[in-house]
Length: 397
Image: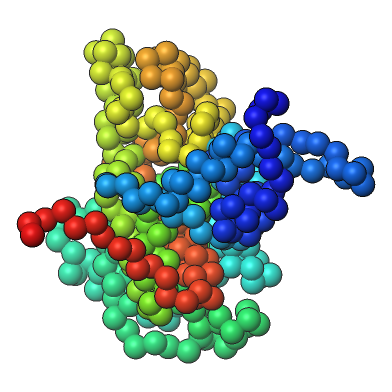
Protein backbone atom coordinates (compact mmCIF):
# COMPACT_ATOMS: atom_id res chain seq x y z
CA UNK A 1 0.00 0.00 0.00
CA UNK A 2 3.07 2.26 0.24
CA UNK A 3 2.84 3.40 -3.40
CA UNK A 4 -0.91 4.01 -3.33
CA UNK A 5 -2.86 7.01 -2.09
CA UNK A 6 -4.02 6.58 1.49
CA UNK A 7 -6.86 8.21 3.41
CA UNK A 8 -7.78 8.51 7.07
CA UNK A 9 -10.67 6.66 8.65
CA UNK A 10 -12.58 9.95 8.87
CA UNK A 11 -12.08 10.60 5.15
CA UNK A 12 -13.12 7.05 4.31
CA UNK A 13 -16.28 7.47 6.38
CA UNK A 14 -17.11 10.65 4.42
CA UNK A 15 -16.55 8.90 1.09
CA UNK A 16 -18.68 5.94 2.09
CA UNK A 17 -21.37 8.00 3.78
CA UNK A 18 -21.15 5.99 7.02
CA UNK A 19 -19.96 6.48 10.57
CA UNK A 20 -16.35 5.83 11.60
CA UNK A 21 -17.50 2.81 13.62
CA UNK A 22 -18.85 1.30 10.42
CA UNK A 23 -15.50 1.80 8.68
CA UNK A 24 -13.81 -0.11 11.50
CA UNK A 25 -16.40 -2.84 11.05
CA UNK A 26 -15.49 -3.02 7.35
CA UNK A 27 -11.84 -3.38 8.37
CA UNK A 28 -12.62 -6.18 10.83
CA UNK A 29 -14.61 -8.01 8.15
CA UNK A 30 -11.69 -7.85 5.72
CA UNK A 31 -13.39 -5.44 3.30
CA UNK A 32 -10.68 -2.82 3.81
CA UNK A 33 -6.96 -3.18 4.57
CA UNK A 34 -5.21 -0.67 6.79
CA UNK A 35 -1.75 0.47 7.75
CA UNK A 36 -0.67 2.65 10.65
CA UNK A 37 1.15 5.94 10.99
CA UNK A 38 1.83 8.53 13.70
CA UNK A 39 0.10 11.91 13.38
CA UNK A 40 1.49 15.34 14.22
CA UNK A 41 0.47 14.93 17.86
CA UNK A 42 2.29 11.63 18.21
CA UNK A 43 -0.89 9.56 18.17
CA UNK A 44 -1.18 6.30 16.27
CA UNK A 45 -3.60 6.60 13.35
CA UNK A 46 -5.04 4.22 10.76
CA UNK A 47 -4.65 4.78 7.02
CA UNK A 48 -6.68 3.06 4.32
CA UNK A 49 -6.08 2.41 0.66
CA UNK A 50 -8.15 5.04 -1.18
CA UNK A 51 -8.64 2.71 -4.17
CA UNK A 52 -10.16 0.06 -1.89
CA UNK A 53 -12.44 2.64 -0.30
CA UNK A 54 -13.54 3.92 -3.71
CA UNK A 55 -14.18 0.38 -4.90
CA UNK A 56 -16.43 -0.14 -1.88
CA UNK A 57 -18.25 3.08 -2.73
CA UNK A 58 -18.80 1.92 -6.30
CA UNK A 59 -19.94 -1.49 -5.15
CA UNK A 60 -22.57 0.21 -3.05
CA UNK A 61 -23.77 2.20 -6.05
CA UNK A 62 -24.02 -0.69 -8.45
CA UNK A 63 -27.11 -2.81 -8.72
CA UNK A 64 -25.89 -6.31 -9.43
CA UNK A 65 -28.31 -8.91 -10.71
CA UNK A 66 -28.68 -11.89 -8.42
CA UNK A 67 -26.88 -10.37 -5.44
CA UNK A 68 -27.80 -8.48 -2.31
CA UNK A 69 -25.35 -7.02 0.17
CA UNK A 70 -26.33 -5.43 3.46
CA UNK A 71 -24.07 -3.55 5.85
CA UNK A 72 -25.79 -2.80 9.16
CA UNK A 73 -24.37 -1.40 12.37
CA UNK A 74 -24.64 -3.85 15.27
CA UNK A 75 -23.20 -4.02 18.78
CA UNK A 76 -24.07 -7.69 19.26
CA UNK A 77 -21.50 -9.85 17.48
CA UNK A 78 -18.19 -9.25 15.73
CA UNK A 79 -16.82 -11.67 13.14
CA UNK A 80 -13.13 -11.39 12.42
CA UNK A 81 -12.37 -13.00 9.03
CA UNK A 82 -9.06 -14.16 10.48
CA UNK A 83 -10.96 -16.59 12.71
CA UNK A 84 -12.30 -14.93 15.85
CA UNK A 85 -15.90 -14.63 17.06
CA UNK A 86 -16.91 -12.15 19.76
CA UNK A 87 -20.24 -11.78 21.57
CA UNK A 88 -20.56 -8.27 23.04
CA UNK A 89 -16.76 -8.08 22.95
CA UNK A 90 -16.27 -11.45 24.69
CA UNK A 91 -14.54 -14.33 22.93
CA UNK A 92 -17.16 -16.94 22.01
CA UNK A 93 -14.80 -19.89 22.47
CA UNK A 94 -13.95 -18.73 25.99
CA UNK A 95 -17.65 -18.43 26.75
CA UNK A 96 -18.18 -21.94 25.39
CA UNK A 97 -15.56 -23.25 27.79
CA UNK A 98 -17.25 -22.05 30.93
CA UNK A 99 -20.73 -20.58 30.43
CA UNK A 100 -24.21 -21.93 29.78
CA UNK A 101 -26.42 -20.96 26.84
CA UNK A 102 -28.70 -19.21 29.36
CA UNK A 103 -25.79 -17.07 30.56
CA UNK A 104 -24.71 -16.23 27.02
CA UNK A 105 -28.26 -15.32 26.05
CA UNK A 106 -28.40 -12.85 28.94
CA UNK A 107 -25.03 -11.43 27.81
CA UNK A 108 -26.33 -10.95 24.27
CA UNK A 109 -29.48 -9.33 25.67
CA UNK A 110 -27.45 -7.17 28.11
CA UNK A 111 -29.70 -7.94 31.06
CA UNK A 112 -27.01 -8.39 33.68
CA UNK A 113 -28.75 -11.59 34.78
CA UNK A 114 -27.28 -15.07 35.15
CA UNK A 115 -28.30 -18.42 36.54
CA UNK A 116 -30.97 -21.01 35.86
CA UNK A 117 -34.23 -20.39 34.04
CA UNK A 118 -37.58 -21.71 35.19
CA UNK A 119 -39.84 -23.61 32.79
CA UNK A 120 -43.04 -21.73 31.89
CA UNK A 121 -46.43 -22.77 33.19
CA UNK A 122 -48.21 -25.27 30.96
CA UNK A 123 -44.96 -26.43 29.31
CA UNK A 124 -45.82 -30.14 29.29
CA UNK A 125 -49.25 -29.45 27.83
CA UNK A 126 -47.80 -27.45 24.95
CA UNK A 127 -45.14 -30.09 24.19
CA UNK A 128 -47.80 -32.80 24.22
CA UNK A 129 -49.82 -30.78 21.72
CA UNK A 130 -46.73 -30.36 19.50
CA UNK A 131 -46.29 -34.13 19.32
CA UNK A 132 -49.99 -34.59 18.63
CA UNK A 133 -50.02 -32.30 15.59
CA UNK A 134 -46.63 -33.26 14.10
CA UNK A 135 -46.58 -36.18 11.66
CA UNK A 136 -44.62 -39.30 12.52
CA UNK A 137 -41.03 -38.87 11.50
CA UNK A 138 -41.01 -35.07 11.91
CA UNK A 139 -37.49 -33.88 12.66
CA UNK A 140 -36.63 -32.43 16.08
CA UNK A 141 -36.21 -28.96 14.55
CA UNK A 142 -39.60 -29.26 12.84
CA UNK A 143 -41.21 -29.91 16.23
CA UNK A 144 -39.38 -26.90 17.66
CA UNK A 145 -40.80 -24.71 14.88
CA UNK A 146 -44.32 -25.96 15.60
CA UNK A 147 -43.76 -25.13 19.27
CA UNK A 148 -42.68 -21.60 18.33
CA UNK A 149 -45.76 -21.31 16.12
CA UNK A 150 -48.03 -22.22 19.03
CA UNK A 151 -46.29 -19.64 21.17
CA UNK A 152 -46.70 -17.02 18.44
CA UNK A 153 -50.41 -17.83 18.15
CA UNK A 154 -51.12 -16.95 21.76
CA UNK A 155 -52.27 -13.44 22.70
CA UNK A 156 -49.42 -11.33 24.01
CA UNK A 157 -48.86 -11.95 27.72
CA UNK A 158 -47.23 -9.63 30.26
CA UNK A 159 -43.90 -10.87 31.57
CA UNK A 160 -44.21 -13.09 34.63
CA UNK A 161 -41.40 -11.08 36.24
CA UNK A 162 -42.65 -7.67 35.16
CA UNK A 163 -39.85 -5.55 33.84
CA UNK A 164 -37.16 -7.33 35.84
CA UNK A 165 -34.67 -6.56 33.10
CA UNK A 166 -35.08 -2.87 33.82
CA UNK A 167 -35.04 -1.61 30.25
CA UNK A 168 -38.63 -1.90 29.11
CA UNK A 169 -37.98 -5.24 27.40
CA UNK A 170 -39.24 -7.47 30.20
CA UNK A 171 -42.18 -8.92 28.29
CA UNK A 172 -40.19 -9.55 25.13
CA UNK A 173 -37.30 -11.17 26.95
CA UNK A 174 -39.71 -13.25 28.96
CA UNK A 175 -41.14 -14.48 25.66
CA UNK A 176 -37.63 -15.21 24.36
CA UNK A 177 -36.75 -17.31 27.41
CA UNK A 178 -40.04 -19.15 27.14
CA UNK A 179 -39.46 -19.80 23.43
CA UNK A 180 -36.00 -21.25 24.03
CA UNK A 181 -37.18 -23.56 26.81
CA UNK A 182 -40.18 -24.67 24.77
CA UNK A 183 -38.09 -25.31 21.64
CA UNK A 184 -35.56 -27.34 23.63
CA UNK A 185 -38.30 -29.49 25.20
CA UNK A 186 -40.00 -30.07 21.84
CA UNK A 187 -36.87 -31.64 20.31
CA UNK A 188 -37.07 -34.95 22.12
CA UNK A 189 -39.60 -37.79 22.15
CA UNK A 190 -42.85 -37.19 23.97
CA UNK A 191 -42.33 -37.25 27.72
CA UNK A 192 -38.61 -36.36 27.68
CA UNK A 193 -39.40 -33.05 29.39
CA UNK A 194 -37.37 -30.26 30.97
CA UNK A 195 -34.07 -31.43 32.45
CA UNK A 196 -33.17 -28.33 34.47
CA UNK A 197 -31.21 -26.39 31.85
CA UNK A 198 -31.13 -25.95 28.10
CA UNK A 199 -28.03 -28.00 27.32
CA UNK A 200 -29.12 -31.02 29.34
CA UNK A 201 -32.62 -30.85 27.88
CA UNK A 202 -31.30 -30.66 24.31
CA UNK A 203 -28.77 -33.45 24.88
CA UNK A 204 -31.40 -35.78 26.38
CA UNK A 205 -33.91 -34.93 23.67
CA UNK A 206 -31.48 -35.69 20.84
CA UNK A 207 -29.63 -38.71 22.29
CA UNK A 208 -30.50 -42.26 21.33
CA UNK A 209 -29.45 -43.33 24.85
CA UNK A 210 -28.99 -41.34 28.04
CA UNK A 211 -26.18 -38.88 27.27
CA UNK A 212 -22.98 -38.97 29.27
CA UNK A 213 -21.88 -35.83 31.15
CA UNK A 214 -19.24 -35.21 28.49
CA UNK A 215 -21.88 -35.38 25.75
CA UNK A 216 -24.02 -32.84 27.60
CA UNK A 217 -20.95 -30.62 27.91
CA UNK A 218 -20.22 -30.87 24.18
CA UNK A 219 -23.84 -29.99 23.37
CA UNK A 220 -23.59 -27.02 25.74
CA UNK A 221 -20.46 -25.81 23.95
CA UNK A 222 -22.12 -26.16 20.55
CA UNK A 223 -25.21 -24.25 21.70
CA UNK A 224 -23.08 -21.38 23.00
CA UNK A 225 -20.93 -21.19 19.86
CA UNK A 226 -24.05 -21.09 17.68
CA UNK A 227 -25.82 -18.43 19.76
CA UNK A 228 -25.17 -15.75 17.14
CA UNK A 229 -23.12 -15.18 14.01
CA UNK A 230 -23.67 -11.59 12.97
CA UNK A 231 -25.88 -11.12 9.87
CA UNK A 232 -26.51 -14.67 8.71
CA UNK A 233 -29.46 -15.14 6.34
CA UNK A 234 -31.85 -16.19 9.09
CA UNK A 235 -30.84 -13.19 11.20
CA UNK A 236 -31.63 -10.83 8.34
CA UNK A 237 -35.07 -12.45 8.20
CA UNK A 238 -35.47 -11.87 11.95
CA UNK A 239 -34.50 -8.23 11.65
CA UNK A 240 -36.88 -7.71 8.74
CA UNK A 241 -39.72 -9.15 10.82
CA UNK A 242 -38.70 -7.19 13.91
CA UNK A 243 -38.58 -4.00 11.87
CA UNK A 244 -42.28 -4.33 11.09
CA UNK A 245 -43.07 -4.50 14.79
CA UNK A 246 -43.78 -8.25 14.80
CA UNK A 247 -43.88 -9.66 18.34
CA UNK A 248 -40.86 -11.55 19.68
CA UNK A 249 -42.31 -15.07 19.07
CA UNK A 250 -43.11 -14.16 15.45
CA UNK A 251 -39.62 -12.77 14.87
CA UNK A 252 -38.07 -15.93 16.35
CA UNK A 253 -40.32 -18.14 14.22
CA UNK A 254 -39.29 -16.18 11.12
CA UNK A 255 -35.63 -16.87 11.83
CA UNK A 256 -36.29 -20.52 12.65
CA UNK A 257 -38.03 -20.94 9.30
CA UNK A 258 -35.21 -19.29 7.34
CA UNK A 259 -32.69 -21.47 9.17
CA UNK A 260 -34.36 -24.61 7.81
CA UNK A 261 -32.80 -24.60 4.35
CA UNK A 262 -29.93 -26.79 3.06
CA UNK A 263 -27.75 -23.72 2.43
CA UNK A 264 -27.96 -22.73 6.07
CA UNK A 265 -29.17 -24.56 9.17
CA UNK A 266 -29.47 -28.06 7.72
CA UNK A 267 -26.03 -28.09 6.08
CA UNK A 268 -24.78 -30.42 8.81
CA UNK A 269 -26.90 -33.25 7.39
CA UNK A 270 -24.91 -33.70 4.13
CA UNK A 271 -21.77 -33.14 6.21
CA UNK A 272 -22.87 -36.06 8.39
CA UNK A 273 -23.31 -38.21 5.29
CA UNK A 274 -19.79 -37.29 4.16
CA UNK A 275 -18.30 -37.98 7.59
CA UNK A 276 -20.08 -41.31 7.99
CA UNK A 277 -18.83 -42.51 4.62
CA UNK A 278 -15.34 -41.16 5.32
CA UNK A 279 -14.88 -43.21 8.48
CA UNK A 280 -16.26 -46.24 6.63
CA UNK A 281 -14.21 -46.05 3.42
CA UNK A 282 -12.17 -42.89 2.98
CA UNK A 283 -10.75 -44.14 -0.31
CA UNK A 284 -14.21 -44.04 -1.88
CA UNK A 285 -14.91 -40.53 -0.55
CA UNK A 286 -11.59 -38.92 -1.42
CA UNK A 287 -12.30 -38.39 -5.15
CA UNK A 288 -15.61 -36.66 -4.33
CA UNK A 289 -14.09 -33.87 -2.24
CA UNK A 290 -14.25 -30.51 -4.01
CA UNK A 291 -15.20 -26.93 -3.21
CA UNK A 292 -18.89 -27.83 -3.01
CA UNK A 293 -18.32 -30.47 -0.32
CA UNK A 294 -20.50 -29.87 2.73
CA UNK A 295 -18.74 -29.04 5.98
CA UNK A 296 -15.88 -26.97 4.55
CA UNK A 297 -15.29 -23.30 3.85
CA UNK A 298 -17.16 -20.19 4.95
CA UNK A 299 -18.24 -16.96 3.29
CA UNK A 300 -16.67 -14.77 6.00
CA UNK A 301 -13.78 -16.68 7.56
CA UNK A 302 -10.66 -16.65 5.39
CA UNK A 303 -9.08 -19.51 7.28
CA UNK A 304 -10.46 -21.58 10.12
CA UNK A 305 -13.93 -21.38 11.65
CA UNK A 306 -13.30 -20.91 15.40
CA UNK A 307 -16.52 -22.76 16.25
CA UNK A 308 -15.36 -25.84 14.35
CA UNK A 309 -11.85 -25.62 15.80
CA UNK A 310 -13.20 -25.57 19.35
CA UNK A 311 -15.72 -28.39 18.99
CA UNK A 312 -13.44 -30.69 17.01
CA UNK A 313 -10.62 -30.16 19.51
CA UNK A 314 -12.92 -31.09 22.40
CA UNK A 315 -14.23 -34.16 20.57
CA UNK A 316 -10.67 -35.28 19.79
CA UNK A 317 -9.56 -34.77 23.38
CA UNK A 318 -11.78 -37.66 24.48
CA UNK A 319 -11.09 -39.87 21.45
CA UNK A 320 -7.61 -39.79 19.87
CA UNK A 321 -8.73 -42.15 17.10
CA UNK A 322 -11.51 -39.76 16.17
CA UNK A 323 -9.03 -36.90 16.19
CA UNK A 324 -6.85 -38.74 13.65
CA UNK A 325 -9.86 -39.36 11.39
CA UNK A 326 -10.86 -35.70 11.49
CA UNK A 327 -7.32 -34.55 10.78
CA UNK A 328 -7.03 -36.90 7.81
CA UNK A 329 -10.25 -35.51 6.34
CA UNK A 330 -9.16 -31.93 7.06
CA UNK A 331 -5.85 -32.41 5.27
CA UNK A 332 -7.52 -34.12 2.30
CA UNK A 333 -10.00 -31.27 1.91
CA UNK A 334 -7.33 -28.63 2.41
CA UNK A 335 -5.13 -30.18 -0.27
CA UNK A 336 -7.98 -30.48 -2.76
CA UNK A 337 -9.93 -27.30 -2.04
CA UNK A 338 -7.88 -25.01 0.18
CA UNK A 339 -10.81 -24.90 2.61
CA UNK A 340 -10.91 -25.64 6.34
CA UNK A 341 -13.71 -27.40 8.27
CA UNK A 342 -16.67 -25.27 9.32
CA UNK A 343 -19.16 -25.70 12.14
CA UNK A 344 -21.38 -27.96 10.02
CA UNK A 345 -18.68 -30.63 9.95
CA UNK A 346 -18.14 -30.23 13.69
CA UNK A 347 -21.86 -30.78 14.30
CA UNK A 348 -21.75 -33.83 12.03
CA UNK A 349 -18.84 -35.36 13.94
CA UNK A 350 -20.56 -34.59 17.26
CA UNK A 351 -23.74 -36.25 16.00
CA UNK A 352 -22.02 -39.45 14.88
CA UNK A 353 -19.49 -39.74 17.69
CA UNK A 354 -22.02 -39.21 20.48
CA UNK A 355 -24.96 -41.17 19.09
CA UNK A 356 -27.31 -38.25 18.53
CA UNK A 357 -30.38 -38.12 16.28
CA UNK A 358 -29.29 -37.81 12.64
CA UNK A 359 -30.88 -34.35 12.45
CA UNK A 360 -29.32 -33.17 15.70
CA UNK A 361 -27.11 -30.60 13.99
CA UNK A 362 -30.05 -28.51 12.80
CA UNK A 363 -31.79 -28.79 16.16
CA UNK A 364 -28.74 -27.63 18.12
CA UNK A 365 -28.26 -24.81 15.62
CA UNK A 366 -31.87 -23.67 16.01
CA UNK A 367 -32.07 -23.66 19.80
CA UNK A 368 -28.71 -21.95 20.17
CA UNK A 369 -29.42 -19.31 17.54
CA UNK A 370 -32.71 -18.27 19.17
CA UNK A 371 -30.58 -16.34 21.67
CA UNK A 372 -29.05 -14.24 18.90
CA UNK A 373 -32.38 -13.86 17.13
CA UNK A 374 -33.84 -12.27 20.25
CA UNK A 375 -30.88 -9.90 20.59
CA UNK A 376 -31.22 -8.78 16.97
CA UNK A 377 -34.97 -8.33 17.42
CA UNK A 378 -34.39 -5.91 20.28
CA UNK A 379 -31.63 -4.06 18.42
CA UNK A 380 -33.73 -3.69 15.26
CA UNK A 381 -36.64 -2.32 17.28
CA UNK A 382 -34.66 0.93 17.66
CA UNK A 383 -34.60 1.48 13.89
CA UNK A 384 -37.32 2.80 11.59
CA UNK A 385 -38.77 0.38 9.05
CA UNK A 386 -35.86 0.07 6.62
CA UNK A 387 -36.02 -3.31 4.88
CA UNK A 388 -37.57 -2.22 1.60
CA UNK A 389 -35.13 -3.03 -1.21
CA UNK A 390 -36.08 -2.32 -4.81
CA UNK A 391 -36.20 -4.99 -7.50
CA UNK A 392 -34.71 -4.97 -10.98
CA UNK A 393 -37.62 -6.10 -13.15
CA UNK A 394 -36.55 -8.71 -15.71
CA UNK A 395 -39.94 -9.98 -16.90
CA UNK A 396 -42.00 -9.33 -19.98
CA UNK A 397 -42.86 -5.73 -20.86
